[in-house]
Image 1: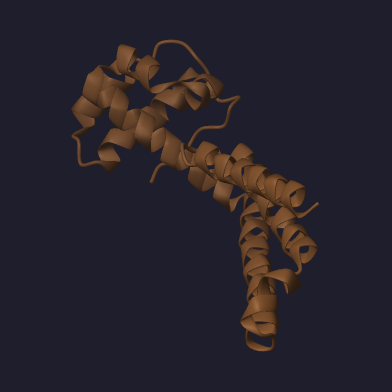
Image 2: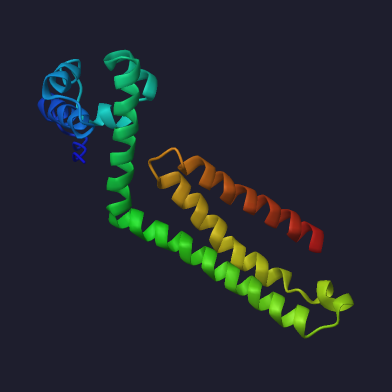
Length: 173
């Protein structure tokens, strides 16, 4: 895959990238040059921030959609390989595993060592809420920082987890 130009890249570097993108999809060099020449002004930052409709207006419906998807994939790949992308991803995965282990520990401890009628009374709600707080914060952070269309749903999941945790706290008072 071609390397996404830096935000400070000039028009020539952006066009060089825009030539490489169609060629990576088995489009001939002549057609790739024709597509790239439609990019007249703008730096790499404009390409990074370009919406699907903006690229479709410049390059045509199909070519704009293809370029948008590939630019989005390249931006996500660059972000996932950056230190902040790696840290936030593994923090979120670690938080989910930690929460699952604490919930499983609580389930094993109280459901297998306690008569069924006392199980609900003995579940350690504060421990579960503390475990889920790390998960929801890491999901929200990851969702906000990721430069892809998957970011908002991940953040929404973190916000929903926070909402249901608040409901559980209010219900346990």
